[in-house]
Length: 399
Ligand SMILES: NC(=O)C1=CN([C@@H]2O[C@H](COP(=O)(O)OP(=O)(O)OC[C@H]3O[C@@H](n4cnc5c(N)ncnc54)[C@H](O)[C@@H]3O)[C@@H](O)[C@H]2O)C=CC1
Ligand SMILES: CC(=O)[C@H](N)C(=O)O
Image (cartoon, rainbow, N blue to C red; front, top):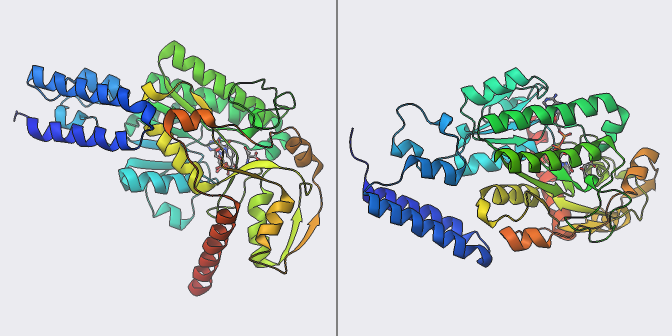
């Protein structure tokens, strides 16, 4: 067997760690420097690039995922993760697949769902049918594709969840149990998003901190608190690399909203462009935390790439802006001045929104792994219009 190139591997490790260090807050640099120096030291004293066990522990790869003839080159720490996204045809899945594919290559990311993908999704990269309620099938997909990261997006959101509690309980709780077990068995890194909906009337309403009373009154919120706690338990009990972010309402031009309480903040852009008339299902003054999808997905990738030693928690709040329907309308009217608006409250969504925080305190995310948002309300609105008008223009040309 040819001897691995010592110089090449040192350079590769140094490059890898330097690029990670640049992305880290200053408070983490010391521990990263230590890791890099200790890796280089081991390589120098052993005369070999890196012991395989060290790579596996440091980067949370399960030894089972290494093929029998794996040599140092195939197991090197900067090897791309192999990623499965469940519930990938919702609002966030495709955007995250695109981001991950840019970073790790098209074939490193498998998008999955129980629905049929549209052509542009199917032809963009690997897609597979995966029902998170089918444990055996999900395990088979993970094993056969040597998955190392599992991004679990399969869910029923808050408003649809209240309309079908048995299904929401099954998808959001039984589905999560399947994913947790498969992730723990196969040594995966597991990301399960949480939400502002994991808080409730007893939580502080303004600048809600990471750690406080969480007594949500929707099946969606209850299932997310359950996910946070189960993930943390599996982390402490079995060493699972579980990570979660509490997302605000996320606004994206990629897909139509999927049955949430914050859907109005996506719908308004489509209605403003199509009909110039918007009906808000929430009261003019209902203020909620919100985030543009690019910020949300970048936060997720940066969080996933943060070394374990920089994390002081497994579940972090992330925030960008807060606004009410009236404030959003005012900003949208700068682009579509003739927009007419009616407030036709949906009692179900209004009741849910009234129990959610108006803003999140995300100082721990900013401190521990350097989270920083890019988009405020004006930037969000102008970007959404630019994207949707671009999309409409392309659709009109295609017809
Ligand atoms: N979009 C948002 O504003 C926010 C989203 N999140 C979280 O982010 C994640 C992704 O959310 P979205 O994409 O917005 O959700 P979505 O509702 O748009 O998409 C969920 C997807 O799950 C799929 N699904 C349903 N049952 C399934 C099953 N049995 N097996 C596999 N897939 C199944 C659906 O077909 C759908 O494509 C969720 O965990 C959600 O709780 C958290 C806070 C805000
Ligand atoms: C904030 C969320 O979790 C989601 N958008 C919903 O409204 O259910």
